[in-house]
Image (spheres, rainbow, N blue to C red):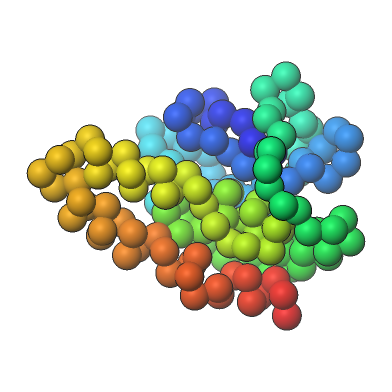
Length: 150
């Protein structure tokens, strides 16, 4: 599930539903000021579900409930205040998809790269390639996935 970030309405914040009234999300350790932090120690936070503003993901193939529950617990042990929240490489969507599906992936970053390509015709492709080089190692080397699966 996700909702629009209150500070940056173009950004979706992804969370995992814990029960009928709470969700957990991966986030930076501090509140954002003008821009999202590119990298800092991350934390997992339990929040009440804001039902009027949340969108439940559709078409996502979830793991079974027991697997997700184990992955949630494992991620708290492995990531909470130990790993970096990185806007481009390990953000809330990477974490939520990892815990719910077993795949560490961020579709927002893919959409962002396409936006860079389309909006900056002269340098957009080069800029997108550079961002892709920075973003994709988390998704393709399966480091976080292996940490959860072990």
